[in-house]
Structures are given as structure tokens and as C-alpha cells.
Length: 147
Image (cartoon, rainbow, N blue to C red; front, top):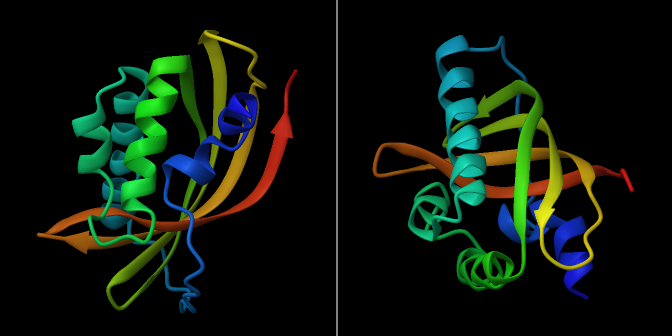
């Protein structure tokens, strides 16, 4: 079961939810895209450095899976040392208080029990909290197992 946690790292750590957001596609806003990319990079760096406070600072406190993410992250930190790479990033849209991106992340084990390195492609929805964009929910589009 602990290997499954590693395989679906985004689903446990980036707040899966069942919210449906219909977004109107707009021309990419480079400043907004850069801000959202920065949140993802901060999140991945915090995970790699196993800094729970920094991880949670990138997640909206009202997101459906906030508490589950906190618990899963603590469990993962005790089991694994992982390396993360953001492979692709594309700003998709802004719709009211929600912003959407498409991202692809590579996760590889550095140390720990059995783990399946993977590339996960997701659509991530962000919502602002106290003037900062934070992870709200996401949908996994594809998981490619590397080993």
C-alpha cells in the first residue's frame, strides 16, 4: 500500500477533489502563469526538503482534502526520500476566482521502501487565499510508471 502512495503522489498531495470547474479559455497571462508555476515549484521543493509547513503554505486551507493531505504528507516523509521535477507547465485559463494549469511532474525515489517512479500529468486548479494563489483541487490525466 505504501508503494501506491508513491505512485499516485499528486492525488494524495495536491488535493484531489470532485469539484467541477467550467473555465473559459483566455489568452495566457504571462504574469499569472508565472505566479502559478512558482507555486508548483515551491510545493515540489518543499516536498523534496520534507518541510511540512512550506508544503501546507501552498495548499488552500479550505480545500476538500487539506487535512488528508497533511496526514498523508507526514506519513510519506517518514517512509520516503523523493526527488521531484516539473517537466511541463502550461497556463490554461482564469475563470472568476479559479485559475487552471496543466502540468507534468516526474517523481523518483532517492531512499525508502519499494516505490514506483512515475510521471504524472494533471490539471491543477488554484484559488486565492489571503491574496496568494494556492492549490485547490486537481485531476490526474495520466500516470506513466517508469520502473
